[in-house]
Image 1 (cartoon, helix red, strand yellow):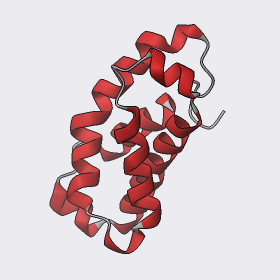
Image 2 (cartoon, one colour):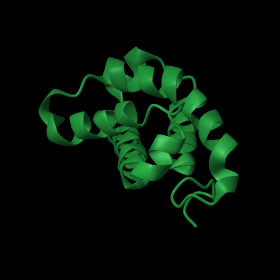
Image 3 (tube, helix red, strand yellow):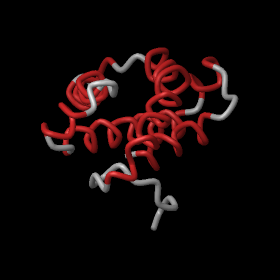
Image 4 (cartoon, helix red, strand yellow):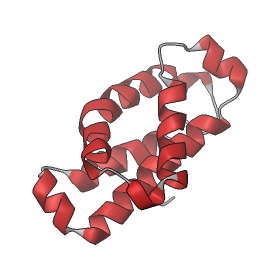
Length: 112
């Protein structure tokens, strides 16, 4: 989960909204990464989610559902805002609990 959130921030970098709107490959990559973050959150047990209410699990999972099921009307402004505004704090929250050994939260090297 953490690795995909981190990778989405890295890929977006300093890309403006206008640049993102013109770069279809980046759009698809970022949408997929945000979907994976949401899917990973959905796989975290309800007990773990209850233990860590500081993490906005339902928002993360809800974003995944919107991207997957509303694919014809994805708002790239919201996708970019999620990456810029929400994912950095999510990463910090995940890093704070990653030592608990919760599956799917780790930050392994991307692609390994």
